[in-house]
Image (tube, rainbow, N blue to C red; front, side, top):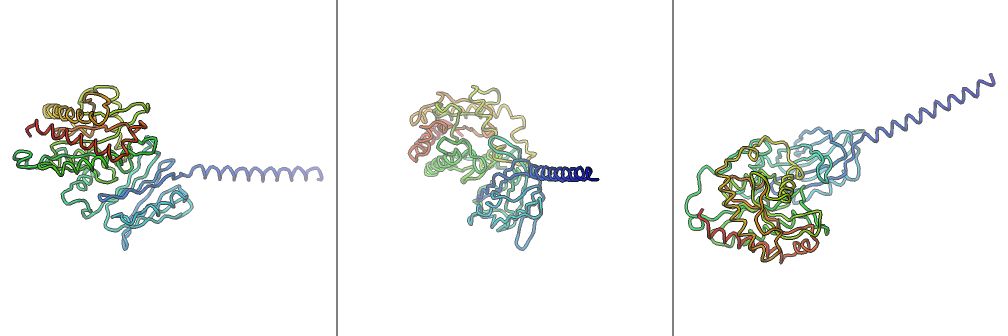
Length: 413
């Protein structure tokens, strides 16, 4: 009896230690299985508001709506409340036209509940995005106004976004009634300015933290001011605030507004910081004119994946291009680009002395001469410094404007 008691106690101690070890492993396993939310961002605009939750793994969620007041409720599964999630309340701006406030809390042991209180009737669009570039998994909540929104009365952007999200963006966005009269005399020359990137997509970022999306918006606004002051010309913009607009919608807006010219404005970046100079690109339906042009087109065409779009059934940019119309348009684009490039060379060194070509999605309107301008290399320290200055931004805008006028004087629309 005396010899068996220590053995019995030893077995109990070992069993207790094993149970404690199993509990600790189980606890670690549960903690490891939880998804961590690493960033929350709110992007308000006059067109729609976007809320983004970035996470270490795909988020599972359920959503429903409540009224009095209007709310969107999102239950996010397998998540614990952390300081990142709590920060969402402080990101809601008083000026946001759609989102009034955000509340978040631990609904049950493994569920976080996010409540978005709304200022008006909203059509929400929720979708997830896989990791790309510097982004990990994302849950996107787009809040679209149900009753028209606060965009400018003659701006079709909201309607085009609605069609796009429904997978119903028409292939032919031209107005039913064709333009009549001589451009510049009977009707204005219509120019669509497209500041690249925006919202969730910052574009390239310089060493000093300069964001491409901010710089190109400032240049586009300066160019618009010059155009609007010119008799016989009118300018529209694909975006006039920090909002993400899908590439297809940018093209569709240009066609809807019956644009005669399309100008997409960017600031280049390259891994080698010594790369410098301004460039102009036109569309190529075949091979790119250089490996650099091909690389740039691939990176620019990823804007939708970075900015974040839900799946769309739209085939506008994927359909077979009408060769005769597109060929004539590309020819005009090259002439237009040459006029702009020559004048940009007077205010900045040129990266290439000719207009290059590649398969840029944003240049694929089949009947609008379109160019993509790389104003300078934001990855180059000196050019990043220049891009930040009002003087250089104005010089770029003036050189592009001079190119528009030179091209307009030689072309019969």
